[in-house]
Length: 95
Image (cartoon, rainbow, N blue to C red; front, side, top):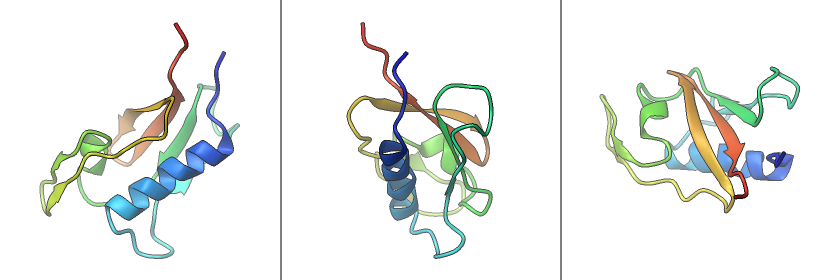
């Protein structure tokens, strides 16, 4: 099974923070690798703009705010929305 490395998960977290101009101390958090029993890594951001998980990674319009550009993810990963404040970073499976 292919896994997401800490370095790649941190890159995705940082891309999300930059895309949404997160304030220091209130930006998205990368949860511990053993945070839950599911694959991938979780990026959680309770203080993020309303609707941010709906626009990551494809871009779009936030309910209250400017349009969000498409997020250029590192090679070999994708994002799955969990809820209104968190997403899971997963490795693309090799076919």
